[in-house]
Length: 565
Image 1 (cartoon, rainbow, N blue to C red):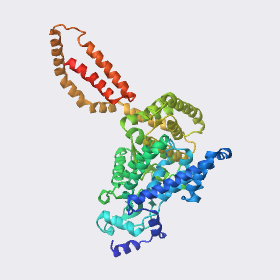
Image 2 (image 1 turned 180 degrees about the vertical axis):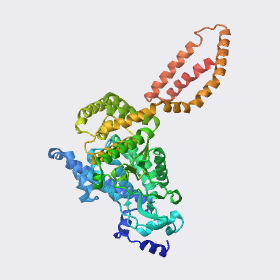
Image 3 (image 1 turned 90 degrees about the horizontal axis):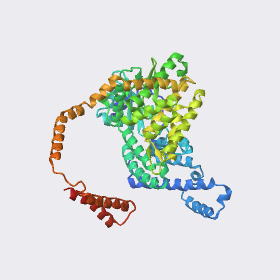
Image 4 (image 1 turned 45 degrees about the vertical axis):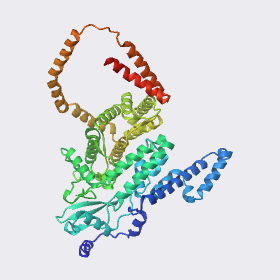
């Protein structure tokens, strides 16, 4: 960018900002280092966490247990290993060690920790609570470097597109950085750019994390580390593609085109790429802003209704929902209207999963504990040694307790779902990450609702909107639409029916004209072949001799075929 262009932006006053160049360079790995150096850094922190975790476990034992000979030997080993580890960090509780080491490893691992913080279905509460304290505002890219990023993506001087770009970032997260800007036409927009080197860092760290996940899967399979890390890598790599975020915003806007009071930012496609996003600035306030409490009761009730309608429609009507929902990503706009921002992370439900979740949620708000447990068990994936019956029984008990306590406002519907899902790991039942993200959306909606209108009845409000979705789903028009999707197959079957009937009659006629044969012919070969097949299968199941197993299976398959020919 030219010096004249820079001075033109600098001429517009901005609030003072501290120099963050040194802090950014210290904190952010911009992809300059190779995978070997990154592997060594990761291995060092994994080693430190292992030693620190073992030390924390030993310190947590009763004094009598710590004095046993084997424990004393282990304490000496840990002390010796601890000489290679930061002593101050090693003496912290394990959850604190985990959080601090993720922060030291940088943006990718901080993002991983933020995802892990919502996996209360898999991880102990002490760890998820501590991970909620991870840094949520990372050092910003220096202003001049940010302008260079924009210009590289625009391929024209920045001052040809924008009359002003604020030097103070609105936000600086692990992947992107956001600034307020003004187009030459006078419209205020938000400019979001992917930080330099972050994609390369994410791809490199993803390789290391997947390898680490495979090792941890052998050590602590109960927490499903391989599954969690794979899901994290998939979501994070998609989030680093801003073209996807633009697509998400337009998909949401299209889905809610008949609901003008639910607003999503308009995308300026002509200025956007996969690393740069220029979108409409939604000028609103957050639900936590004290000005929200100054709204009239009617406006607050309207906002709660709009939020419920929007979130439940995303989840159970469209199966396409905001997967990073928290109060900072919700806006109260004039009207009042409800606005959604930061749409890089979305969740998707397939048709079957969306239907099962809709039925599950509807049974919850009706207080039908038995069917709620049934549908939740259908959603789960049974792992080795799973006990679905015990899981359903646990979920039924939780739902019954909630149905008795909900009227007194002592139980959150979102926390009910989370507690039910959390019981899955104890019974070998595991849920997709979308299920946990759905819970996060419900908890956020409930929390915002309680801020705007303390004591509101979430079950009654949800029931009204879910009933509307059910009526839409099973209305005559919807059924007719679904029938039309199957129309080509029905027409094809009808077209083939006469030929199939004719061929069937001809084969029947030929069969009746054949001379009678001995009905027991070939039975001996068939029985012997079946015996060989079963014997081979039993040997295979119990790791019998491979040559004998193969021979029996071959005889069992080929002998009846030979007799048939």
